[in-house]
Image (cartoon, rainbow, N blue to C red):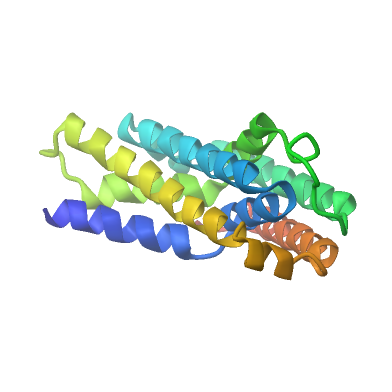
Length: 205
C-alpha cells in the first residue's frame, strides 16, 4: 500500500509541475482544439508507458550509467525541443481554427506529445527513480506493470483535464486575442527547455 501511494503521489507531482509536456498540450489545445489536446495527452501517456517498460526491464539504469548514451539522449531531446519551439514560434497565428479540417490532425498531435516526452531525459530519470527507489526486489512483475499503468493513466487524466478546461468556450474565447503572442511564448519556453538540457550535457547528473 505504501508503494502504491508513493507512486500515485510522485505521478501527481511530476504531472502537475509545468514542463515541456504541459507546454505542448496547452499549445495544441488552444491552437487545435479539444481533440488535438486529448491526442497530445495520449501521446505523452504513451511515452510514459514506454519509459516505464524499459525501466522495469532495467534498460533505463543501463542508459543512466552510460555517459555516452545518456549524453546522446539529452542532446537528441534538446534538439527536438529546440526544433519544436522554433516551429511553434514560426507557426504562431492570431486566428483560431474555424473547422475540424483546419485544426491539428490527431496523429500529428499524438506524435508531438509522444516525442516531447520520449526525448526528455528527465522523464527517463523519473521512471527509473520510481522503479528503483519505490519498488523492491520482492515486488512482483505484475505489480510493477500496474504501477506503470497508473503512471501513464495519471498523466493522461491530468492533461485531459487541462485540455477540457482550456477548451471551455469562455476560457478559449479569453485566449483568442492573445493567441499568437501566447503561441510565441510557448515556442520560446520550449527553446529555453531545450537549451537548458543541452547546456547540462556532460555535467554531473
